[in-house]
Amino acid sequence: MDFNVKKLASDAGVFFTRAVQFTEEKLGAAEKTELDAHFENLLSRADYTKNWTEKILRQTEVLLQPNPSARVEEFLYEKLDRKIPSRVTNGELLGQYMTEAANDYGPSSPYGQTLIKVGETQKRLGIAERDFIHSSSINFLTPLRNFLEGDWRTISKERRILQNRRLDLDACKARLKKAKAAEAKAAAEHELRVAQTEFDRQAEVTRLLLEGISSTHVNHLRCLHEFAEAQATYYAQCYQYMVDLQKQLGRFPSTFVGNAEAVVPPPISTSPPAATLPLLQAVSPNPADGTMNPAEVKPPASGTRKARVLYDYEAADSTELALMADELITVYSLPGMDPDWLIGERGNQKGKVPVTYLELLS
Image 1 (cartoon, helix red, strand yellow):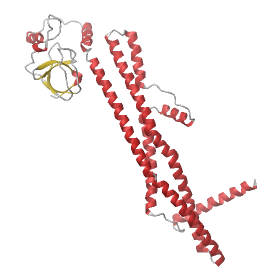
Image 2 (image 1 turned 120 degrees about the vertical axis):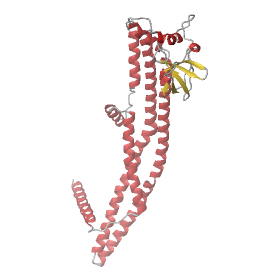
Image 3 (image 1 turned 90 degrees about the vertical axis):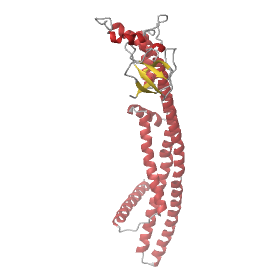
Image 4 (image 1 turned 120 degrees about the horizontal axis):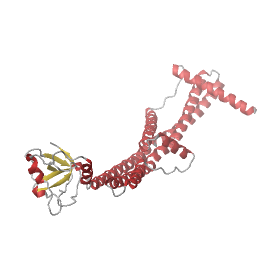
């Protein structure tokens, strides 16, 4: 018990002495050993490396998991060294709801069929998102976190020791200046040599750790490349899934319009104006199979537009025009046509094209 009391008193004395020494240094009344410029640069680089690593880590966690409650839960599991439970993504949950709704509406109905197709795509998007989050957590977040919880703690500990060694060295210098008797000077000089040796040794240890920050930057650079590659792969998958979905949905517009027309009351007069008869005849179906013959379509005198193709499109039959991304075609609409489709022309080729695959330019 006496030992603990003495130690407590000693620690309190050291703390008080340090406080006085820091105050005198701030006021310029005490000598302070300065570190060389290279060492100060290493300290500065270590500080901003730590600060920016923390900010990048936290914001990446927000990007991968926007839900604060979920992030707190994952943090607790990690601290308790327990496996984080697998969590269904929002896309997967949405896809599940769409599929279940389709079963109630009728999977063979137009709405049910579309719900199933969109739901399947949402599930694929959700799975891709989960894979991206898992990959980024391992290849990017973990190295950043390891630096903050490992290397940086070691650097911080050695910097505190170096600070104490510097204070001890400056205190010895102050005692040597105040010593008058030869015996006191000899004792102060011995203490100064010991303090200088310990300070130099600790400065070298700290300097080596600080120079290791360069290796940390190289490692984080590699991890950053892997993160960007994983993100590019994820977005490329999402883009391809949506293009595939657009192609699938492009087969259904006529069905949707047919359903809509079924509930719209017929006009009072079923005979179109005489001026529109030639245009309606141009898009009338062939008597044999009920399909439009693109070769018989006549473009209107005005109303044609240029359009840029956004995605590749494979024609479903001879009435449609196959498209290649980024090409320019001429498009126009005719009375009575499905609003989701236009007539497209490329040289002597002509056929129906889906509006969702086009960017109208003029």
